[in-house]
Structures are given as structure tokens and as C-alpha cells.
Length: 242
Ligand SMILES: Nc1ncnc2c1ncn2[C@@H]1O[C@H](COP(=O)(O)OP(=O)(O)OP(=O)(O)O)[C@@H](O)[C@H]1O
Image 1: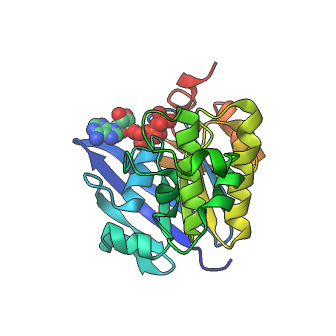
Image 2: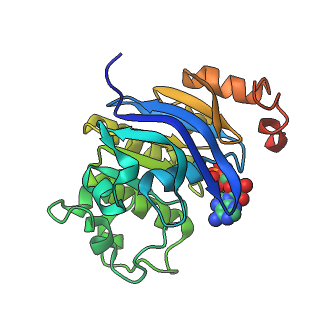
């Protein structure tokens, strides 16, 4: 096995005195799309915030190596400089600037138009609009993804990239995920949507802060659905399922 791009070992994190991540082990290889599945509250977003170095999220134990570097020892901007980026579930940063500025924030040399086209938004209609409440939730989400695309990240963490996206446009999101890989990046793909998860190369299931299954996306989805979790016997993982 080659050295993983991201190598998480024994990661533990408490938020507001609750243990959210509990000795979590996970690897993402270079060039891999890795889907992360898990019930509501299992710790997926907490892991994303912790990896990015967001305020209030600190590991109490464990290690994270990113391209061999000790990620947890680095401030947020250093992590971003290494090519780690997160597409937020609720894109709300930099309210009021134009879509052109927003999409170019992480890479000023990159023309924002192709990235907007990739996410299915017509540059002529959107480039001069402001990123504010005048955009629909789905439009804001797509603009966020366009900004991630134009950054050309080494590892993009996408937290529910298809949330609020209409059924017909999910193909654009899948296309973005593939483009990130084709341009040399890797993706940690947090999703509840089966059709999005199945586009990954590999997948893992999180239950109560720990990885309980890793394998092909198909096997991981089936494991999640099957309530055969070794950690909770389906009781935690299963409670959101129909
Ligand atoms: N700042 C906080 N204060 C208190 N509890 C928190 C905080 N952040 C996260 N939690 C709790 O940690 C648990 C994990 O939350 P997290 O958002 O990581 O789950 P998730 O797997 O992303 O869920 P979802 O699928 O609903 O998005 C939840 O029970 C949540 O309430």
C-alpha cells in the first residue's frame, strides 16, 4: 500500500464535554474519492471541522498525517496552504461580495467561468450577482463548490455537496467530484445520498465517532442499511433509517 495522503489514527475529540470522535482511524489515498457515511450526529462534520482546524474543535488524542505532515500542529491557514479545503454545508462566508470574487478567492489566477459552468450555473447570469440571500440555497451551494474547484485542492472535504440540489442537477455535483479527482486531487465526501456515495472509489461508515466499516461504496451502503454495525448493533446507526 502506498503512503496515504491522509492518515488519521486514534483521533478523539470532545466538544462541550461530549466525546464526539472516539479513537477514529481513517485513511484517504492520493487520487481517491472516499465517501463517509453515518447517521445524523455520528460525527462527520465534527471530523471535517477538526481536520480544517476550526475554532472550538481540538483533538484530545490521536494523530493526523497529511502528506506526512503533522496536521494537528498546524494553524488553519497552513493547512489551507497544503491544499486542504472544505466546502461548507451552509456556505455563508463573505456575504455581499460578487460571485466572481467569491469563486476566485482561493485562486486569483484562475478564470472563474469554467468552474461556474461545471456546477451548471451560467457565468453571464451569475458572475456579477452578490453572494447574499438573493441566491437560492442550491445556487449558493453550487457557488461554494465552484470556489472549491477553482482552488484545485490536494484534498477537498465536501460536506453534503448535494444537499438542496434538485434531482436533475445532481449530475453536475457528481461531475465536480470527478473533476476534482481528474485534476489530481482527492476528496473526502460526506454524504447521505446513496447515488452520490456510489460514485466514490472507497467508503467508510462512521458510528458514534468511530469507523465501523470500510470497503467498496456498495458494500458500505449495504452495511449501513443492514444495521449490522459492530459498534451499536444498528441501534445508533439505524435510528434515522426508514
Ligand atoms: N459545538 C457543539 N456543541 C455541542 N454539541 C456539539 C457541537 N458540535 C457538535 N456537537 C454534537 O456532536 C455530535 C456530532 O455532530 P456532527 O455535526 O459532527 O454530526 P454529523 O455526523 O455531521 O451529523 P449530520 O448527519 O446530522 O450532519 C452531535 O450530537 C452534535 O450535537
